[in-house]
Structure formats: C-alpha cells, structure tokens
Image (cartoon, rainbow, N blue to C red; front, side):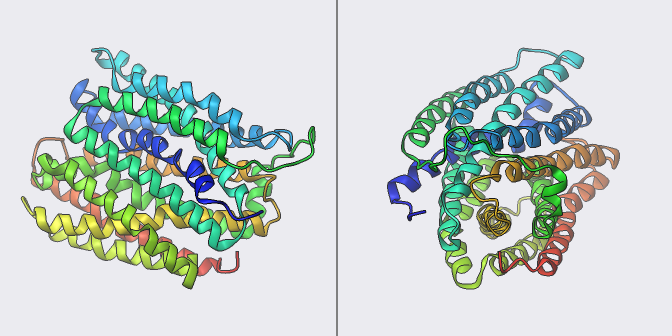
Length: 413
C-alpha cells in the first residue's frame, strides 16, 4: 500500500485520544473512586474488576472472530460506530453512580463496567486491526503506532488535568464530544483496503493463533510485561496518598508520567527504526527497572525524587505503548495474515491487555488487604506490603519479560 499522508495518519491516530480517556479513569481512578464514594471494600472492587475481565476472555476473541468474518470489501467503520453508544453510556453510568451501598453498589459497579468494557473492546479491536492493515512496512508501522499512542497519551494527559482541576462531569462531556468528533474523522478520511465484494474472511481459531511460534512468544512477553506495568498503575493513588503523603500532587505526578511517555515517543520510534523494535523495547524495560528500584528508598514527602522516577518510568511506558503493537503487526504480516485476520489477533491481544489489569487489581488489592494494608491507615506492615507490591514485584516481572523477549528472537518479524 502507498505511504500514508499526514492527514490520513492523523485522521486514523486521533481516535486514540478518546479511547485513552476511557481507559485511564477505569484503570487508575476507579478503585479509589468507588472506595471513597460508595465505601466499597478493596476485595469487592478487585473482585468486580477481575470478574469483568474474565468475561472479556470470551468476549474479545469472539468480537475478533466476528469482525474477521466481514466481507472483504467491508471496512472496520461499522464496528467503530456501534461501539460509541456503549462507551458513552457505560462511562457516564460508571462515574455517576446513585448513592448505593452493599450488594446494590457492587451490582451497579459490575454492570456499568460490563457495558463500558464491551464498547471499549469492540472499538479497540476494530481500530487496532484497521491500523495493522494500513501498512506492513516496518518503518511505517512503527510511525503509525507511535503517532496513535501519542494521541492516546494526549488523551491520558487531558484526563489527568481534568480530574486534577475539574470533575467527572466535565470529563464525561469531553469524552463524549471527542469520541463523536474523532470517530467521524476516522470513518470519513482513513483509507480502506479495497477487495472483492461478498468475499468473507475466515477467522483464526485460538489453536491456529497460538500455533504461530512468534505470536506465542510475543504474547507471553506482552502478558508478563503488562502485569508489571498494571500493578503500579493500580496502586499509584494508594501509594502516593498513604506511603508518600503526596495525595495533593497525584494529578501533577500522573501528568509528568504520561507527558514523559508522550515526549519519548519520537526517541523510541527513531531507536526502533535504527536498532530494531526488540532492542528498543529491551532498553525500555531496563530503564523501567532502574527507575522503580529507587522507589524502595523513598520516604514520606519525597516529592522531587518521586518526580524523577515518574519521568523515567514514564519514558519506558512510551516504548511499552508504541513497540508491542508494531511487533504484533510484523508477526501478522510474517504469518501471511495481513488484511485478513488482524481482528483475530487483536481480539486475543486486547483480552491480554485487560487481563493484565484485572490480575493486578483482582489479586494485588485483596492480597494487600490480607497483608494488613488498609487505605488511609499508615501501619508499618501495611506500608511495607504496599511498597513491595508497588515497586519490587514489578521490577522482578520486568526482568522476566526482558529475558523472555531476548529469548524469543523476534528481530526478523
């Protein structure tokens, strides 16, 4: 396919902005939001998050298979359009709950999560599959994923600013408006693959997907690395409030973290084009480990030191966002499945992304509660457990992911 023009690239990439606005509040803010607003326990919140993610184990691959069954001449646009009302209604319901407690609060939380996750799954799988089908040239695919993820990070940064200085009502309005505008640009101006009308694709089964050695290896790296990223994301607000006593700076620190990720995108793109996506990602993993080791030495009020850690760990996040999807596009192309089965791959890929976060919340939060951590209470055992979970465990997982990536030998995809 011809190289994408700047206007085509931006028309595609800008839809990543509102998708990220959906993701950040759910992954980072929602545990503390429901704990504070409705008085839900960490165990109940973690259970709801884990159950909804397990449901995605069935939903996401199914969505991918449905999209891959579309006629060859049909674009991904109808699936994007179908996802919009689910995203908007689910998000508004999730962050504007009625005053409930006990089981009704749990059911409201669980139900609105299901709706917003369904919309997010449908939109994300169609959107990422569309991007993977646009180009198979390595330099172009890294550029495409980097610009897309940079737009996503702009959405994350905007969300952090709104939450810090505004409220969830403003956030809901901004999300709804940006979803409608960017979806319109995406559908109207992003190129569509031409094909033979009426000819349908045949989706790949899980057995066929995981028979691909390169996909199997990349998937394992992605899961381990993803859990390493998800654990501190889930615990960030608890750590800044109870361990560092910096709750008043949490929005600013998140802003620094995501801004560093966005500004590092050109660096990782250039490095990937010169040294390869694998080597660039390995370097980012090591940078993350070196950053988080410093967390173990932090004490109450260490704002400047934690700011530096947020900046360098944010830079590593830039690579985590840009490079894995580019590697996956290469795996799809090497397997001969470009413009045929992207949605099958991204259905499983998106499920893994969600399970990473679900495992972080569903296992880490109850485990911390079991080890004596109670939000708002600074006991010695609780603070020690929180620090080890926030920093030490992710470092070990990052090192494991780096070893698996080195062993995978994915340089040729």
